[in-house]
Structures are given as structure tokens and as C-alpha cells.
Image 1 (spheres, one colour):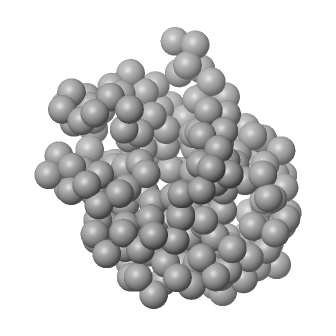
Image 2: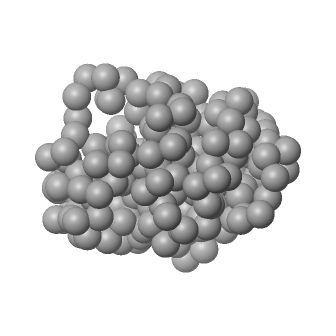
Image 3: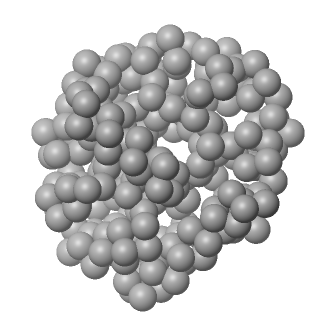
Amino acid sequence: MDASLAQRWQSAVEQLPLVAILRGIAPDAAEAVGDALVQAGWLLLEVPLNSPQPLRSIETLARRFPQALVGAGTVRTVEEVRQVHAAGGRLVVSPHFDARVVECSRELGMVSLPGVMTPSEAFAALAAGATALKLFPAEMIPPAAVKAMRAVLPADVLLMPVGGIAPSTMAAYRAAGASGFGIGSALYKPGMGAQDVAASAQAFADAWTGTMRA
């Protein structure tokens, strides 16, 4: 990862370590939704590859928001990593851990967030070069499990639960050692207007800020 991208990642995580998972977004909605998110302080924008024309949306978001870190979710193959990179995406999020996907992301200088559930997967992902770890699905990884994983992983590793996270559940995960979160359908669903996205984005941002004060 070059210094510029590393700085963007660090700045985004320090400002608001929440990844907006825009599953199902269409390219013609990307700018308005992106505006709402960025104005609320979100700088980590993910378009899952099972969305309509995801590479177009990634290209649009990356061009419009150079201060943000834009990329793809549901990335499962090396070829998909390369497609995302070509579209201007620099963030690769996967539902699983595949060493080839992580290594290709690293070689292309991208941020890599593979999905893991166990300490074995977590250590393997870190050895392959993962930037941070997506704990997925969080419905199967309660705060107690996050605390147990935090106890054995290096202290500087970022752990980001994804799946079923709501503003009301963030504090318990944060207290257990979560470093941030990925937020999907509770933040954005296809057809939502920018105003509704803005309200949801602010609610999550406020909840995160509350966990930092607690």
C-alpha cells in the first residue's frame, strides 16, 4: 500500500471507522447516496459485487469522492480484485478468507478486509497481508467472542464486526474490543432516498461517537 492510500485509510478509520455497505445500489443513485454519507463523515464506501453494475458505481464514487476510500464487497476471486482496481476501487472486502484474494489485493496496493470467524482464520489472514479483519457474520460472533479473539490477536489489529449491527448494539461490541463496523441494510436499502440515508448515517455516527465517550 503506498503512503497516500495508507494515509487515507488511517484518516478514515480515525474519523469514523464504519464501512457503508451499499448492497443493491444502482449507478444512478451512487452520487446522491455517496453525498449523504460523506457529509455525515463516512469515508469507507463499499459496493458489493452482487449489486447492479457494481463497477460503474465504484468508478462513480471513487471519482466523486477522492477523499474517501471506495471499493467492493463480496469479492471472492483474484479476477474480481483486478476488476475493482481497474474501476478505481482501493478497498477489497470479502465474506471469507482466501489467501489469493488477500495477496492480490496487497500486491496491487489495496486495503484488504477478509471475512473471518475464528482465531485460526484471523491469524492466517494476517499472515497473508490483510489490512484489518471483518468478523462475519457478526450474528454468530457475539461481543464475548470478540473479547476472546481480542485477547489473543495483536493489539493493533482492527476488528470490524459485520452483520446485523444496529446503533443499539455497537456499545457492547466496542467494549469487547471491536475497532469499527460494517453496516449494511440498517444503513442502506435499494430505493432509499438520500435524506433517509443521511438520517441513518448520522444515527450510526452518533452511536459510534457515544461508544467513544462511554
